[in-house]
Image (cartoon, rainbow, N blue to C red; front, side, top):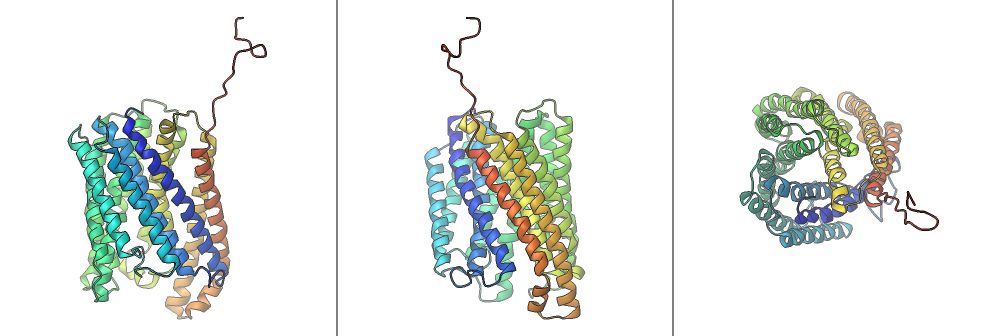
Length: 449
């Protein structure tokens, strides 16, 4: 660790890991409700469990992005963070907002819009925290050295913060409401977050492989161009059935097809950089997570997204378990695994306690990735059956759900593997293996005496 202010990232990582644990626990609980629908139905209804699960996911991923920025920007800009105090204030605002949102959900107060259920005061708090962050990081970059990595990272973070404004727009017209809603949800995860992902992945591969910066930057700009080209108009694949003009069926289908390209480029980029790398970095766990992130993102966001993005297919498959299969694998690969890669790289330096137990860390990777892959296959089969029975044959929804119970039981088992892997990762980060220190004495004489 070169700069003292990078320690800010440590507290963001701790907060992110705490919410990560809550998020996967909530997901496991929601998975069991699919198996036993009346479980906790009066004490903790399914809609509240789901809100906590999805909101915790979004917030801890954002905390991870902020941690990555506060760790890598000083190294890229070659100067300390402009104001560490503002960074800590931002963290406090985000944590208070998170606790306030969860408390509101538990007593039945929420906005009712999926992913954007936060009470209005929490939304304003998130906006204030985002503005503090943008000021802090932008001033750090502008007063220091500027690189392609910081340029792309700032572009992604500025855009995702500006798009948050649409979370406040809630028109009475349902079609307009869903359109503005997708401006946040889609343009976050399938456009601006991709820029953040590309920048962080570039930084990690630069440090882990020793490849020339010029090579990394060329790949980075190509990935960014394809992500924005495909992602912005690719929003149209959400406009098929919400009352917008019919031309969106063609626009959405065509540009959504191109959305596979940036994820394929990121996967190729990661493996080519490792192949061209001139050094063997001791942090194997961070490299494994980096390669795993780009690979799983390609399959989850790219391949599984393409499976049901064409309007002729989506007419039958939208809103089924195929959507859940795509969403879980895409989020895990593109953003969860990426954040865990950053944490694996940064934490040993932030804690100054190397070496840490990489075996446990890498075991957690295979547990989580294997569990998520199995969950994706299970939900894909369930969604295919659901599509045929419900949308083609015309069976009643609840009758179809009863027939899918065996798939939901397998999904719960896969989720349990993911939770065990997550807890193992958190343990490997926080309970670091210490070096054995031998004190010279009569029982342990100094060699040579």
